Length: 567
Ligand code: ATP
Ligand code: MG
Image 1 (cartoon, helix red, strand yellow):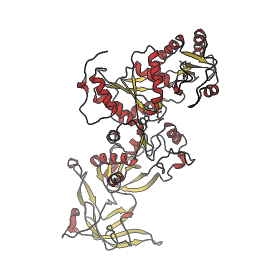
Image 2 (tube, helix red, strand yellow; image 1 turned 60 degrees about the vertical axis):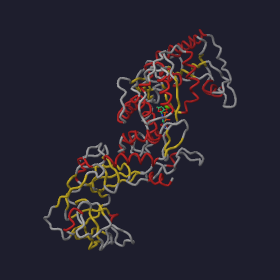
Image 3 (tube, protein in one colour; image 1 turned 90 degrees about the vertical axis):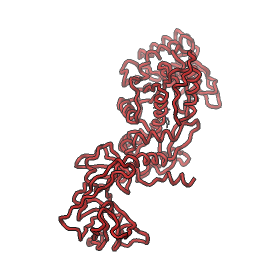
Image 4 (cartoon, helix red, strand yellow; image 1 turned 30 degrees about the vertical axis):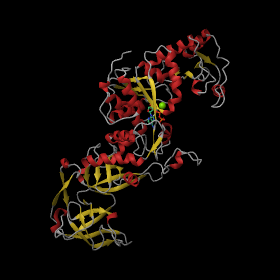
């Protein structure tokens, strides 16, 4: 081992956490001269925001310390794994802004080595083939308070074990007929050490190794050894693997591995109003309770991308929540606050009306055309302006008109004057209704002196509302989203309900007839925009030129800022 001090690799950054402290120490002491981390997903589902935390941590460290981060698929369970998941994981990591370069690995590439190491254990008398049924194995494993019971097959001879393991590999037995177990200690207080299963029979085709194998290594026999094979210096994983560490260390100690990685555990991300287990997310997809893995209400990276969350905002969020050793739950409002912060800086502004109410400007000449300059983003002086065309017939949002308004209602009402954003002051003169008494349109007069929305004679109006030109506007479907669950902790079990029963029946509102500024028709699919006063939006991937669809990413109101101000 070298003792070269590589403190020159320690980045000058405000990001600190206990893992970075350990790495800094390992570089100063010369324990390592290059940092290698990995993000190790099992390709059995799409990535979620919890994975984003792990990705930002592992790739972020590699980036900051001029090291590398491997993308390694821990693909030990062919029954649940699919190429679709592998592809989506790669797309999501890339979209988040990280690059594994040539370091794309699969635990299945190590199946031969792992198989040799299993034989190595047998030859050392440290593994045996067990003929007990799964039920017997489970019962004989003991409990948290009682030790386990040795298997009657535990003392098989090395020769018999070698022969049986070979026959397992050759497909001579049915699934669950036999397993290979490490011979450690059935009385260990740590259940993971009670002769864990390390190989099982699965007559299943693997997405990468095909029909080559009918025995597969267990995750616990694969994960740590894969880290060793890849010379990972800091194996970072979540707290639920803390109890597995003694087992991983045991394998590393007894096997002829090329390196000795050390595992560090951190707290997984939990979010209010969100489920994060892949099993539960899969159920939502399979039972069609959402529209696929990338449904914008899903906490998946692909769902968030479709919803319009910018990757910068997700990375920022992951930096903000930090890395701790104790589990906790983060307020969903904090994630939304990070989304707003980013979009406020970057999203161009447009006008849109979700529930259109026709307005006729009665004194506006038929053939007049006014083009107004509207700023693209008041937060960004370089964003420039766009032209918006005024006209005699407009739409405003039905919410912005009241026939009998209460006091302090500053929007449009009979006799009231408001500013139409960027355009003119208008005063409501008439309300037109159909036979049933529904308001069908309203009539206004405009003040030609207020051109550009400026006050003609220091006359003040309190309300400014958005509008679109009725002739020019494009019609669109707009999807408004709310939380997928009404319960802050949908995983709770104390009420005897399943998480499905906590689903929000109103998590999606589809608006069919929104009217938008015509420029929105040509907005690229990945370009977030703000609809003034309504929130941030993004074009949906199913949007077509003649059938526009926009998703609301998040509203404008910041409930997180309110929560913080209260504290
Ligand atoms: P789930 O529990 O959602 O099914 P998993 O742990 O089985 O997830 P993996 O594909 O094994 O999913 O996860 C890959 C990596 O991401 C692991 O290192 C895991 O510790 C980490 N990870 C998973 N969920 C979270 C989370 N909520 N917060 C932080 N890291 C996570
Ligand atoms: Mg896992």
